[in-house]
Length: 430
Image 1 (cartoon, one colour):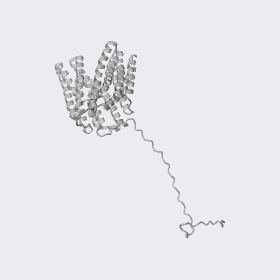
Image 2 (cartoon, rainbow, N blue to C red):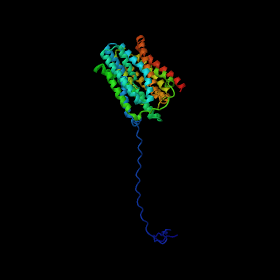
Image 3 (tube, helix red, strand yellow):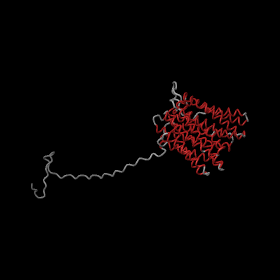
Image 4 (cartoon, rainbow, N blue to C red):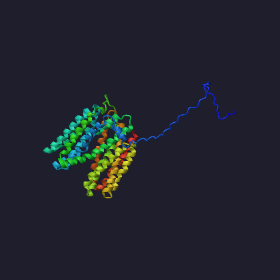
């Protein structure tokens, strides 16, 4: 085909066969496509995110506030009673006997109070039981102040045994709220353990300050007021209270938790003996004034470790006990140096090893306790711990008198090994 001149003949479009040739309209320019920005990386949730999610649940902040107010006196009553009685009557033997009687009464009455709470509800039982305990504390103040016979001191302090296990009731609420959420439940149990350590760290310090600076009775009176106020706030949060199940309750918490009792008893021995050994050792070094801060450092380590453990994947009970057994040997080794700094560091590490063990062991209590009897089961565990604390303190005192304070550090190390050995029975009956 030839092209004539410079004229280009365009074929007609099929859609318009008779249309004359026309110039092609210009194509509008295509706007440039803006460059796509890279998506922002997701913001890191941060270490406190599990706890923020925990306290975002409705009602949790209210009952936690009451729980902390009512739990702080748990570390105040014993120290306050000893300082008040010894200061007014001039006898540490009498003061020690009175507090020991109250501890024994708590071991007997505490599980029964917890059983009533499981059967009839927290608010219905905890408030009257707390009123009885507060009246016992007020009676103790009056009897000490007026010079009443010694037996009235024993009777008054024994009445405080009706104090409900506020930590157990709080854990029961978390268990009710976080059913089917094991990660959140682990975080809640870690928070509760950290709260225990915090209150038992601050309670004695506050009690000693009030009794020595204000009045000998100020520690007991403040503790009673905090207990009653906190319990009223706690029980007023009805929406988070675990429901009471009607009908008979099957299964015995004591039988279900039997394999765990030696573990809690041995752990209590660790706590009680470590405290006595530390006080005696520092006093022998002429550093008795440092006893309070050093013991507070140990509790602070446990508190921090508990909070950190709540953000991590839970470990097995055997793993936690192995770590605790290794950490409890450190103060024994540090005591041989005869200086404060290595001992303080060793106690800090030892404290950090106890919180994961307690959180994991309490999780076993939750798993083993029969339905509807959780408060009773946790109170039995706490009772075993208190019994171990008394046994450990008495045994450590004997070792200090006969073998020296540094040797007494062997007792918490040996008790932690016994706790590790007892886990075999837990594993066999799981």
